[in-house]
Image 1 (cartoon, rainbow, N blue to C red):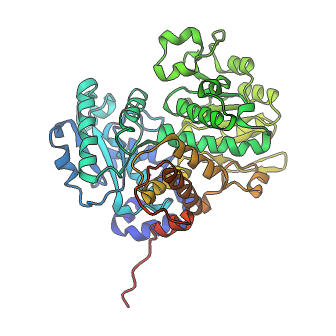
Image 2: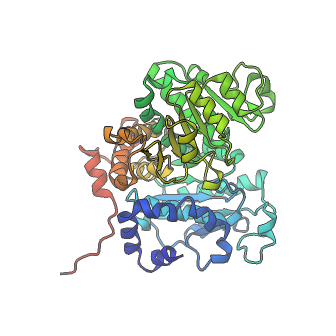
Image 3: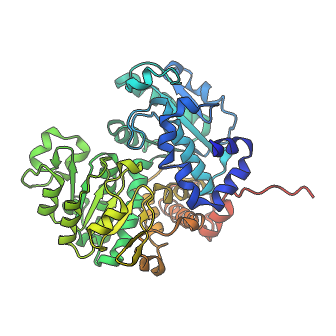
Length: 482
Protein backbone atom coordinates (compact mmCIF):
# COMPACT_ATOMS: atom_id res chain seq x y z
CA UNK A 1 0.00 0.00 0.00
CA UNK A 2 2.86 2.37 0.83
CA UNK A 3 4.53 1.76 -2.52
CA UNK A 4 1.23 2.26 -4.39
CA UNK A 5 0.78 5.59 -2.64
CA UNK A 6 4.37 6.59 -3.34
CA UNK A 7 4.02 5.75 -7.04
CA UNK A 8 1.03 8.08 -7.28
CA UNK A 9 2.53 10.90 -5.18
CA UNK A 10 6.11 10.92 -6.44
CA UNK A 11 6.73 8.74 -9.50
CA UNK A 12 10.44 9.53 -9.77
CA UNK A 13 11.09 8.67 -6.14
CA UNK A 14 9.14 5.42 -6.49
CA UNK A 15 11.29 4.28 -9.42
CA UNK A 16 14.50 5.47 -7.76
CA UNK A 17 13.58 3.36 -4.74
CA UNK A 18 12.79 0.38 -6.98
CA UNK A 19 16.02 0.61 -8.98
CA UNK A 20 18.24 0.99 -5.91
CA UNK A 21 16.55 -1.84 -3.97
CA UNK A 22 15.36 -4.15 -6.74
CA UNK A 23 16.15 -7.48 -5.07
CA UNK A 24 14.33 -6.48 -1.89
CA UNK A 25 11.32 -4.84 -3.54
CA UNK A 26 10.72 -7.12 -6.53
CA UNK A 27 8.77 -9.67 -4.41
CA UNK A 28 6.70 -6.77 -3.04
CA UNK A 29 5.87 -5.07 -6.34
CA UNK A 30 5.36 -8.36 -8.16
CA UNK A 31 5.20 -12.05 -7.26
CA UNK A 32 4.32 -13.27 -4.72
CA UNK A 33 2.75 -10.15 -3.15
CA UNK A 34 0.88 -9.06 -6.28
CA UNK A 35 -1.21 -12.24 -6.12
CA UNK A 36 -2.52 -11.36 -2.68
CA UNK A 37 -3.08 -7.76 -3.81
CA UNK A 38 -5.26 -8.98 -6.70
CA UNK A 39 -7.30 -11.19 -4.39
CA UNK A 40 -7.99 -8.19 -2.14
CA UNK A 41 -8.11 -5.57 -4.90
CA UNK A 42 -11.73 -4.59 -4.29
CA UNK A 43 -11.09 -4.03 -0.59
CA UNK A 44 -7.94 -1.93 -1.05
CA UNK A 45 -9.09 -0.06 -4.17
CA UNK A 46 -8.65 3.71 -3.89
CA UNK A 47 -8.38 5.03 -7.44
CA UNK A 48 -7.85 3.56 -10.88
CA UNK A 49 -4.25 2.96 -11.94
CA UNK A 50 -5.16 1.71 -15.40
CA UNK A 51 -7.86 1.63 -18.04
CA UNK A 52 -10.92 -0.62 -17.79
CA UNK A 53 -12.73 -1.70 -20.95
CA UNK A 54 -15.91 -3.71 -20.43
CA UNK A 55 -18.58 -5.40 -22.49
CA UNK A 56 -20.67 -2.26 -22.04
CA UNK A 57 -18.06 -0.32 -24.04
CA UNK A 58 -18.63 -2.28 -27.25
CA UNK A 59 -18.87 0.07 -30.20
CA UNK A 60 -16.86 2.81 -28.48
CA UNK A 61 -13.61 1.17 -27.37
CA UNK A 62 -11.61 3.68 -29.43
CA UNK A 63 -13.36 6.50 -27.57
CA UNK A 64 -12.41 4.91 -24.23
CA UNK A 65 -8.76 4.57 -25.29
CA UNK A 66 -8.68 8.23 -26.27
CA UNK A 67 -9.73 9.15 -22.73
CA UNK A 68 -6.34 8.01 -21.38
CA UNK A 69 -4.27 11.02 -20.38
CA UNK A 70 -1.07 10.01 -22.20
CA UNK A 71 -1.13 9.90 -26.00
CA UNK A 72 2.31 8.47 -26.82
CA UNK A 73 2.02 4.86 -25.64
CA UNK A 74 4.75 2.30 -26.40
CA UNK A 75 3.79 -0.70 -24.23
CA UNK A 76 0.35 -2.01 -23.23
CA UNK A 77 -0.11 -4.89 -20.79
CA UNK A 78 -3.65 -6.25 -20.99
CA UNK A 79 -5.48 -9.00 -19.09
CA UNK A 80 -9.01 -10.31 -18.85
CA UNK A 81 -8.36 -11.63 -15.35
CA UNK A 82 -9.35 -15.23 -16.05
CA UNK A 83 -6.12 -16.91 -14.95
CA UNK A 84 -4.26 -14.66 -12.52
CA UNK A 85 -0.98 -16.37 -11.61
CA UNK A 86 -2.03 -19.71 -10.11
CA UNK A 87 -5.06 -18.16 -8.41
CA UNK A 88 -7.66 -18.58 -11.14
CA UNK A 89 -10.44 -16.22 -12.22
CA UNK A 90 -10.20 -12.89 -10.37
CA UNK A 91 -12.13 -10.88 -12.94
CA UNK A 92 -11.25 -7.21 -13.15
CA UNK A 93 -9.35 -7.48 -9.87
CA UNK A 94 -6.56 -8.81 -12.08
CA UNK A 95 -5.64 -5.17 -12.82
CA UNK A 96 -2.84 -5.55 -10.28
CA UNK A 97 -0.98 -7.68 -12.82
CA UNK A 98 -0.73 -5.12 -15.68
CA UNK A 99 0.08 -2.37 -13.16
CA UNK A 100 2.83 -4.44 -11.56
CA UNK A 101 4.27 -5.63 -14.87
CA UNK A 102 4.50 -2.11 -16.24
CA UNK A 103 6.19 -0.86 -13.08
CA UNK A 104 8.87 -3.45 -13.86
CA UNK A 105 9.02 -2.40 -17.51
CA UNK A 106 10.12 1.00 -16.22
CA UNK A 107 12.24 0.06 -13.20
CA UNK A 108 14.03 -2.89 -14.81
CA UNK A 109 13.81 -2.12 -18.53
CA UNK A 110 13.87 1.65 -18.61
CA UNK A 111 10.67 2.15 -20.61
CA UNK A 112 9.24 5.60 -19.79
CA UNK A 113 6.37 5.30 -17.27
CA UNK A 114 4.28 7.75 -19.31
CA UNK A 115 4.60 5.37 -22.30
CA UNK A 116 3.05 2.44 -20.38
CA UNK A 117 -0.66 1.64 -20.28
CA UNK A 118 -2.23 -1.06 -18.04
CA UNK A 119 -5.58 -2.34 -19.33
CA UNK A 120 -8.14 -4.81 -18.00
CA UNK A 121 -10.81 -6.22 -20.30
CA UNK A 122 -13.84 -6.82 -18.08
CA UNK A 123 -16.06 -9.53 -19.54
CA UNK A 124 -17.40 -10.72 -16.18
CA UNK A 125 -16.18 -13.46 -13.87
CA UNK A 126 -17.12 -17.02 -13.00
CA UNK A 127 -15.82 -16.55 -9.46
CA UNK A 128 -18.95 -16.80 -7.30
CA UNK A 129 -17.17 -15.37 -4.27
CA UNK A 130 -16.37 -12.19 -6.19
CA UNK A 131 -19.85 -11.93 -7.71
CA UNK A 132 -21.24 -11.93 -4.17
CA UNK A 133 -18.61 -9.54 -2.79
CA UNK A 134 -20.04 -6.07 -2.14
CA UNK A 135 -16.62 -4.54 -2.85
CA UNK A 136 -16.11 -6.20 -6.24
CA UNK A 137 -15.59 -3.39 -8.78
CA UNK A 138 -16.26 -5.31 -12.00
CA UNK A 139 -19.27 -6.48 -14.00
CA UNK A 140 -21.48 -8.71 -11.88
CA UNK A 141 -22.18 -11.37 -14.49
CA UNK A 142 -20.83 -14.67 -15.70
CA UNK A 143 -17.85 -14.44 -18.01
CA UNK A 144 -18.68 -13.79 -21.68
CA UNK A 145 -17.38 -16.33 -24.20
CA UNK A 146 -17.58 -17.17 -27.88
CA UNK A 147 -18.49 -14.55 -30.47
CA UNK A 148 -19.31 -11.87 -27.89
CA UNK A 149 -15.83 -12.18 -26.37
CA UNK A 150 -14.06 -12.39 -29.73
CA UNK A 151 -15.81 -9.30 -31.10
CA UNK A 152 -14.78 -7.21 -28.09
CA UNK A 153 -11.14 -8.31 -28.44
CA UNK A 154 -11.21 -7.60 -32.18
CA UNK A 155 -12.55 -4.12 -31.55
CA UNK A 156 -9.95 -3.54 -28.83
CA UNK A 157 -6.99 -4.60 -30.97
CA UNK A 158 -8.22 -2.55 -33.93
CA UNK A 159 -8.66 0.49 -31.68
CA UNK A 160 -5.15 0.09 -30.25
CA UNK A 161 -3.61 0.11 -33.72
CA UNK A 162 -5.76 3.03 -34.87
CA UNK A 163 -5.01 5.12 -31.78
CA UNK A 164 -1.34 4.29 -31.15
CA UNK A 165 -0.07 2.88 -34.44
CA UNK A 166 1.49 -0.49 -35.23
CA UNK A 167 4.63 0.00 -33.12
CA UNK A 168 2.89 -0.26 -29.74
CA UNK A 169 3.71 -3.55 -28.00
CA UNK A 170 0.58 -5.36 -26.76
CA UNK A 171 1.47 -7.88 -24.07
CA UNK A 172 -1.28 -10.39 -23.29
CA UNK A 173 -1.14 -11.33 -19.64
CA UNK A 174 -2.85 -14.06 -17.59
CA UNK A 175 -5.48 -15.10 -20.13
CA UNK A 176 -6.83 -18.64 -19.73
CA UNK A 177 -5.14 -21.31 -21.85
CA UNK A 178 -8.02 -21.63 -24.31
CA UNK A 179 -7.79 -17.91 -25.11
CA UNK A 180 -4.05 -17.28 -24.67
CA UNK A 181 -2.89 -19.39 -27.61
CA UNK A 182 -5.80 -18.35 -29.82
CA UNK A 183 -5.26 -14.62 -29.26
CA UNK A 184 -1.50 -14.80 -29.77
CA UNK A 185 -1.78 -16.75 -33.02
CA UNK A 186 -4.63 -14.54 -34.22
CA UNK A 187 -2.98 -11.18 -33.66
CA UNK A 188 0.76 -11.74 -34.02
CA UNK A 189 0.60 -11.54 -37.87
CA UNK A 190 -1.14 -8.13 -37.75
CA UNK A 191 0.01 -6.53 -34.47
CA UNK A 192 3.11 -6.21 -32.32
CA UNK A 193 1.78 -8.89 -29.96
CA UNK A 194 3.56 -10.78 -27.19
CA UNK A 195 2.34 -13.19 -24.51
CA UNK A 196 4.57 -13.20 -21.46
CA UNK A 197 3.05 -16.39 -20.03
CA UNK A 198 3.87 -18.26 -23.24
CA UNK A 199 6.89 -16.50 -24.75
CA UNK A 200 8.39 -14.68 -21.76
CA UNK A 201 8.30 -17.73 -19.50
CA UNK A 202 9.70 -19.84 -22.32
CA UNK A 203 12.60 -17.45 -22.86
CA UNK A 204 13.63 -17.25 -19.21
CA UNK A 205 13.44 -21.04 -18.78
CA UNK A 206 15.37 -21.66 -22.00
CA UNK A 207 18.05 -19.26 -20.75
CA UNK A 208 18.28 -21.27 -17.52
CA UNK A 209 18.54 -24.55 -19.42
CA UNK A 210 21.28 -23.15 -21.67
CA UNK A 211 23.18 -21.94 -18.60
CA UNK A 212 22.53 -25.27 -16.85
CA UNK A 213 24.42 -27.08 -19.61
CA UNK A 214 27.58 -25.73 -17.98
CA UNK A 215 26.90 -28.15 -15.12
CA UNK A 216 25.60 -31.19 -17.01
CA UNK A 217 27.51 -30.86 -20.30
CA UNK A 218 26.42 -31.49 -23.87
CA UNK A 219 23.93 -29.54 -25.95
CA UNK A 220 20.17 -29.24 -25.56
CA UNK A 221 19.74 -31.96 -28.17
CA UNK A 222 21.59 -34.41 -25.90
CA UNK A 223 19.05 -34.12 -23.10
CA UNK A 224 15.49 -35.18 -22.32
CA UNK A 225 12.95 -32.77 -20.87
CA UNK A 226 9.81 -33.62 -18.90
CA UNK A 227 7.21 -30.92 -18.27
CA UNK A 228 4.72 -31.22 -15.44
CA UNK A 229 1.97 -28.96 -16.72
CA UNK A 230 0.86 -28.68 -20.34
CA UNK A 231 -0.84 -25.30 -20.33
CA UNK A 232 0.34 -22.09 -21.96
CA UNK A 233 3.55 -21.90 -19.92
CA UNK A 234 4.57 -25.56 -20.31
CA UNK A 235 3.84 -25.87 -24.02
CA UNK A 236 5.28 -22.41 -24.68
CA UNK A 237 8.57 -23.41 -23.07
CA UNK A 238 8.56 -26.75 -24.88
CA UNK A 239 8.09 -25.05 -28.26
CA UNK A 240 10.93 -22.58 -27.68
CA UNK A 241 13.26 -25.35 -26.50
CA UNK A 242 12.36 -27.36 -29.61
CA UNK A 243 13.01 -24.33 -31.81
CA UNK A 244 16.42 -23.75 -30.23
CA UNK A 245 17.33 -27.44 -30.65
CA UNK A 246 16.25 -27.39 -34.30
CA UNK A 247 18.35 -24.30 -35.00
CA UNK A 248 21.41 -25.58 -33.12
CA UNK A 249 21.30 -29.11 -34.50
CA UNK A 250 19.95 -28.28 -37.98
CA UNK A 251 17.04 -30.71 -37.60
CA UNK A 252 13.32 -30.18 -38.12
CA UNK A 253 11.29 -28.87 -35.21
CA UNK A 254 9.26 -32.09 -35.36
CA UNK A 255 12.42 -34.13 -34.73
CA UNK A 256 13.50 -31.69 -32.02
CA UNK A 257 10.28 -32.37 -30.11
CA UNK A 258 11.02 -36.08 -29.73
CA UNK A 259 12.99 -35.64 -26.50
CA UNK A 260 10.39 -33.33 -24.96
CA UNK A 261 7.56 -34.91 -22.98
CA UNK A 262 4.55 -33.37 -21.23
CA UNK A 263 2.44 -34.52 -18.28
CA UNK A 264 -0.99 -32.98 -17.70
CA UNK A 265 -3.72 -33.69 -15.16
CA UNK A 266 -4.51 -37.03 -16.83
CA UNK A 267 -0.93 -38.27 -17.10
CA UNK A 268 1.73 -38.48 -19.77
CA UNK A 269 0.64 -37.06 -23.12
CA UNK A 270 0.94 -39.94 -25.58
CA UNK A 271 -0.34 -40.70 -29.08
CA UNK A 272 -3.27 -42.80 -27.86
CA UNK A 273 -4.72 -39.63 -26.26
CA UNK A 274 -4.63 -37.50 -29.43
CA UNK A 275 -8.39 -37.51 -29.90
CA UNK A 276 -9.07 -36.15 -26.42
CA UNK A 277 -6.42 -33.45 -25.95
CA UNK A 278 -6.24 -29.80 -26.99
CA UNK A 279 -4.58 -29.02 -30.35
CA UNK A 280 -1.50 -27.35 -28.85
CA UNK A 281 -0.69 -30.53 -26.89
CA UNK A 282 -0.87 -32.87 -29.89
CA UNK A 283 2.62 -31.90 -31.08
CA UNK A 284 3.99 -33.71 -28.02
CA UNK A 285 1.80 -36.81 -28.12
CA UNK A 286 4.60 -39.34 -28.65
CA UNK A 287 4.38 -43.11 -29.00
CA UNK A 288 4.37 -44.61 -25.50
CA UNK A 289 2.20 -46.65 -23.20
CA UNK A 290 -0.23 -44.56 -21.10
CA UNK A 291 1.29 -43.36 -17.81
CA UNK A 292 -0.99 -41.94 -15.14
CA UNK A 293 1.32 -40.15 -12.70
CA UNK A 294 4.47 -38.01 -12.65
CA UNK A 295 6.68 -40.43 -10.72
CA UNK A 296 5.99 -43.27 -13.16
CA UNK A 297 6.65 -40.93 -16.08
CA UNK A 298 10.05 -40.01 -14.63
CA UNK A 299 10.98 -43.66 -14.23
CA UNK A 300 9.93 -44.42 -17.82
CA UNK A 301 11.23 -41.33 -19.64
CA UNK A 302 14.39 -40.78 -17.53
CA UNK A 303 14.54 -37.01 -18.09
CA UNK A 304 17.56 -34.80 -17.52
CA UNK A 305 15.36 -31.85 -16.59
CA UNK A 306 12.03 -31.70 -14.76
CA UNK A 307 10.08 -28.48 -15.33
CA UNK A 308 6.95 -27.71 -13.34
CA UNK A 309 4.33 -25.19 -14.44
CA UNK A 310 1.06 -26.83 -13.37
CA UNK A 311 0.36 -24.61 -10.37
CA UNK A 312 0.01 -27.66 -8.11
CA UNK A 313 1.84 -27.02 -4.87
CA UNK A 314 4.17 -29.71 -3.47
CA UNK A 315 3.75 -31.92 -6.54
CA UNK A 316 7.53 -32.54 -6.67
CA UNK A 317 7.52 -34.95 -3.75
CA UNK A 318 10.53 -36.51 -2.07
CA UNK A 319 10.04 -39.61 -4.24
CA UNK A 320 10.01 -37.47 -7.40
CA UNK A 321 13.23 -35.61 -6.50
CA UNK A 322 14.94 -38.83 -5.43
CA UNK A 323 13.94 -40.49 -8.71
CA UNK A 324 15.43 -37.59 -10.68
CA UNK A 325 18.60 -37.81 -8.57
CA UNK A 326 18.96 -41.55 -9.13
CA UNK A 327 18.84 -40.99 -12.91
CA UNK A 328 21.10 -37.92 -13.08
CA UNK A 329 24.32 -36.87 -11.40
CA UNK A 330 23.08 -33.24 -11.54
CA UNK A 331 19.30 -33.22 -12.04
CA UNK A 332 17.79 -29.96 -13.29
CA UNK A 333 14.70 -29.14 -11.20
CA UNK A 334 12.67 -26.08 -12.16
CA UNK A 335 9.63 -25.37 -9.96
CA UNK A 336 8.11 -22.46 -11.86
CA UNK A 337 4.58 -22.09 -10.49
CA UNK A 338 3.51 -18.91 -8.71
CA UNK A 339 2.76 -17.79 -6.07
CA UNK A 340 4.93 -19.53 -3.45
CA UNK A 341 2.01 -21.61 -2.18
CA UNK A 342 1.69 -23.16 -5.65
CA UNK A 343 5.39 -23.92 -6.09
CA UNK A 344 6.04 -27.58 -6.93
CA UNK A 345 8.67 -27.77 -4.18
CA UNK A 346 10.80 -25.46 -2.07
CA UNK A 347 14.51 -24.84 -2.56
CA UNK A 348 15.28 -26.60 0.72
CA UNK A 349 13.37 -29.69 -0.39
CA UNK A 350 15.09 -29.79 -3.79
CA UNK A 351 18.59 -29.53 -2.30
CA UNK A 352 18.07 -31.83 0.68
CA UNK A 353 16.19 -34.57 -1.21
CA UNK A 354 18.81 -34.54 -3.99
CA UNK A 355 21.67 -34.53 -1.46
CA UNK A 356 22.81 -31.15 -2.71
CA UNK A 357 23.08 -32.21 -6.36
CA UNK A 358 20.05 -30.47 -7.87
CA UNK A 359 20.41 -27.53 -10.23
CA UNK A 360 17.39 -25.66 -8.94
CA UNK A 361 15.34 -22.75 -10.21
CA UNK A 362 11.94 -21.49 -9.10
CA UNK A 363 9.27 -19.04 -10.14
CA UNK A 364 8.91 -17.66 -6.61
CA UNK A 365 11.79 -16.38 -4.46
CA UNK A 366 13.38 -18.65 -1.87
CA UNK A 367 16.04 -17.89 0.73
CA UNK A 368 19.55 -19.43 0.45
CA UNK A 369 19.79 -22.98 1.79
CA UNK A 370 22.62 -24.47 3.83
CA UNK A 371 23.10 -28.20 3.28
CA UNK A 372 26.09 -30.23 4.48
CA UNK A 373 27.95 -27.03 5.37
CA UNK A 374 27.53 -25.67 1.83
CA UNK A 375 25.43 -22.61 1.01
CA UNK A 376 23.14 -22.93 -2.01
CA UNK A 377 21.63 -19.80 -3.57
CA UNK A 378 18.38 -20.69 -5.40
CA UNK A 379 17.95 -19.20 -8.86
CA UNK A 380 14.64 -17.48 -9.50
CA UNK A 381 13.36 -18.15 -13.03
CA UNK A 382 11.46 -14.90 -13.05
CA UNK A 383 9.96 -13.50 -16.24
CA UNK A 384 11.19 -10.11 -15.06
CA UNK A 385 14.59 -11.13 -16.42
CA UNK A 386 13.13 -11.15 -19.93
CA UNK A 387 10.10 -8.97 -20.61
CA UNK A 388 11.51 -5.55 -19.56
CA UNK A 389 14.58 -5.93 -21.78
CA UNK A 390 12.53 -7.52 -24.53
CA UNK A 391 10.09 -4.61 -24.49
CA UNK A 392 12.93 -2.09 -24.52
CA UNK A 393 14.49 -3.83 -27.52
CA UNK A 394 11.20 -3.70 -29.41
CA UNK A 395 10.74 -0.01 -28.56
CA UNK A 396 14.25 1.19 -29.49
CA UNK A 397 14.22 -0.69 -32.80
CA UNK A 398 10.70 0.37 -33.72
CA UNK A 399 9.84 -3.27 -34.45
CA UNK A 400 6.46 -3.84 -36.07
CA UNK A 401 6.12 -7.58 -35.32
CA UNK A 402 7.41 -10.12 -32.78
CA UNK A 403 9.03 -13.22 -34.27
CA UNK A 404 10.20 -16.34 -32.45
CA UNK A 405 13.80 -15.54 -33.41
CA UNK A 406 13.53 -12.37 -31.32
CA UNK A 407 12.38 -14.39 -28.31
CA UNK A 408 15.30 -16.79 -28.82
CA UNK A 409 17.64 -13.81 -28.97
CA UNK A 410 16.31 -12.62 -25.61
CA UNK A 411 16.91 -16.06 -24.04
CA UNK A 412 20.43 -16.26 -25.42
CA UNK A 413 21.11 -12.71 -24.27
CA UNK A 414 20.14 -13.63 -20.71
CA UNK A 415 22.11 -16.89 -20.69
CA UNK A 416 25.31 -15.13 -21.74
CA UNK A 417 25.07 -12.86 -18.68
CA UNK A 418 25.73 -15.83 -16.36
CA UNK A 419 29.42 -15.73 -15.43
CA UNK A 420 31.78 -18.35 -14.00
CA UNK A 421 31.41 -16.62 -10.63
CA UNK A 422 27.67 -17.29 -10.75
CA UNK A 423 28.24 -20.92 -11.75
CA UNK A 424 30.48 -21.38 -8.71
CA UNK A 425 27.46 -20.52 -6.55
CA UNK A 426 25.23 -22.93 -8.45
CA UNK A 427 23.33 -20.10 -10.15
CA UNK A 428 21.83 -20.43 -13.62
CA UNK A 429 20.69 -16.79 -13.67
CA UNK A 430 22.63 -13.62 -12.89
CA UNK A 431 21.67 -11.65 -9.75
CA UNK A 432 18.83 -9.16 -10.06
CA UNK A 433 21.08 -6.44 -8.66
CA UNK A 434 22.46 -5.97 -12.19
CA UNK A 435 19.09 -6.19 -13.95
CA UNK A 436 19.35 -2.83 -15.74
CA UNK A 437 22.60 -3.95 -17.36
CA UNK A 438 21.04 -7.34 -18.17
CA UNK A 439 17.99 -5.66 -19.72
CA UNK A 440 20.16 -3.39 -21.87
CA UNK A 441 22.03 -6.42 -23.24
CA UNK A 442 18.79 -8.31 -23.90
CA UNK A 443 17.33 -5.22 -25.58
CA UNK A 444 20.37 -5.00 -27.83
CA UNK A 445 20.05 -8.67 -28.83
CA UNK A 446 16.32 -8.31 -29.55
CA UNK A 447 16.80 -5.08 -31.50
CA UNK A 448 19.64 -6.62 -33.52
CA UNK A 449 17.42 -9.52 -34.50
CA UNK A 450 14.60 -7.13 -35.45
CA UNK A 451 17.00 -5.25 -37.74
CA UNK A 452 18.32 -8.54 -39.20
CA UNK A 453 14.76 -9.67 -39.97
CA UNK A 454 13.82 -6.36 -41.58
CA UNK A 455 11.19 -5.66 -38.91
CA UNK A 456 12.79 -2.53 -37.41
CA UNK A 457 11.54 0.90 -38.43
CA UNK A 458 13.96 3.15 -36.51
CA UNK A 459 16.64 3.77 -39.11
CA UNK A 460 19.56 3.96 -39.52
CA UNK A 461 20.63 1.08 -37.29
CA UNK A 462 22.74 2.28 -34.33
CA UNK A 463 26.34 1.06 -34.41
CA UNK A 464 26.46 0.04 -30.74
CA UNK A 465 23.05 -1.25 -29.74
CA UNK A 466 24.01 -1.86 -26.09
CA UNK A 467 25.08 1.75 -25.60
CA UNK A 468 22.05 2.92 -27.54
CA UNK A 469 19.74 0.85 -25.31
CA UNK A 470 21.37 2.27 -22.19
CA UNK A 471 20.98 5.82 -23.51
CA UNK A 472 17.25 5.25 -24.13
CA UNK A 473 16.51 3.93 -20.63
CA UNK A 474 14.39 6.07 -18.34
CA UNK A 475 16.32 7.36 -15.34
CA UNK A 476 14.42 8.78 -12.33
CA UNK A 477 16.38 12.00 -11.87
CA UNK A 478 15.15 15.53 -11.32
CA UNK A 479 15.84 18.17 -13.92
CA UNK A 480 18.26 20.94 -13.04
CA UNK A 481 16.83 24.41 -13.63
CA UNK A 482 20.06 26.30 -12.92
